[in-house]
View (cartoon, rainbow, N blue to C red):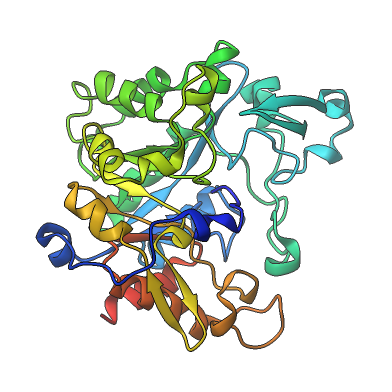
Length: 361
């Protein structure tokens, strides 16, 4: 997920106690989403991380999807892969490093769209947060394709006896469409080839509303159970598809009651940053906005991101120990505060901790 600016809190809905949750969402057990797999334990977006997430009790696994030069969907958090693979150690790819503009931001590195799948398969994943999470598993795992993830999901569903859901995010679809690699049809076609996609819960997420509307239109027939989730970035910014067409709707406009009702015409879920739900203040208390209640009133379920177990990502009032240390008790306390605020699920880097928080309610 994107790293958001501090003004998230300032531009979120007015701080006040949230109203009671919508009856449908108030009674359902919140879902544990394995953010990039069990990414606090294993290198993100590897088959090993997804398997570990299921073993740790995740309800859904979450692959972020980008595309190769030859149009194959693969799992990386971004199409820039210098931070998540060992591509810099491969001299034959040194000349692939370049700078390009993606969603209005200049990015330098190596990009999946410059590699064929065969070339990408020569790379190995590495931990993008080594100071926090170590490098013990670096260069052990390949970059998986969506087809490989679906085969793993089928195996995990059969072996566990659980209906483990899939909640992929399509990354930068406006960018990929502009370079001749439209993602929506490729995603629907890939999912439709796997029978397991029609047997388990399936949700697709994006920061771009037009991409989700396209999926709603083309995905209903081959994937009748497909649900969609609108992600929310920095409220002061525009979705990439809106900005590309000269539109004026910012993310903060999507968070108004009218904006939420608009989202509900094509999506069932809302995925805000947790700061848009509320702020954990001194004394370990959550000052909640009205967003959860407003979303429920519009018929949306709420799935905030991202809950992480290290002090660096915890509210100041819940930290203990060294700055880079894990603090499981603090992470559990934070998740419980948001669960008590009425959220319907959460994206967590450590699904074992999230499972513990949900099951303790």
